Length: 327
Image 1: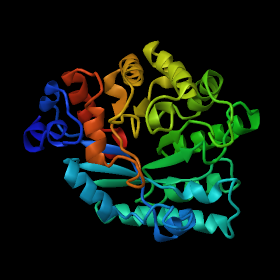
Image 2: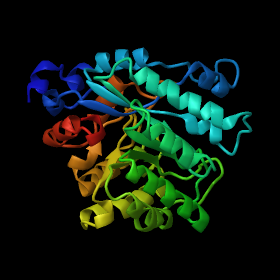
Image 3: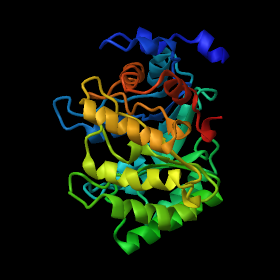
Image 4: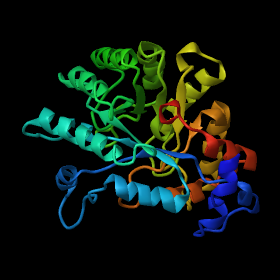
């Protein structure tokens, strides 16, 4: 409760669009559970020319954003998996994956009381288990693993993909590493996504990691906004499992990175709130995504989240939620 007294009431102070009167009693979030860094090498890789890529973002940049928002901690989800995307051909691919993960760990070590880094990898790569084990032995990277099914073109309906994922989840579980997973299948390749894929994840993949936190990024979607019907269908499967106390969903948490927007349609906001309540606010984590492009920064992202038709007590509980890996 002391944190609420010390921190500025962000929802009231964030400005931008007009905020409901009840938001004045809501504190800033304790943590941002979805942040990304971009090393200089990664920024060059993603640069499409004419300033079309993200800038290099380091730990000091994220700390400045957290300070502006009154947020104490954050997790840095490595984007090393980008090197393993099947849409790219990268020389010395695994060397670059290791370097990106190590850079994230070194950046987090600059602010050890406030930042934690997760390593990342394309789980379908032959080196995936090797990299996971390597990260688990590094103090700055041992806390967790980030997987991006869309970027890695994971297709849960394919048995060979599900089997590979089970092996990766089991290895993370053995090493005590939390898992943050971008579940949404590739949008650009129009991969199937919905209830069927969510059931494979719930019934076949999740049981391989029964002892660690599994954080579903973007509430099983991708953002920005919450208007993707396949994502809501997938989330519905997971939300039903949580509501029914399914043992496989026991350690599931969900982050809301990039879902709330100032210009959301009322029906999209209402649907998102319905899912949040179905899951339970105690499992919802605030996150804001990479500070690049049109993504809302942590302060503005929380202001947008405060516009959702949630009760003040619900918002306050979400603000106070901190994942076990950040404690």
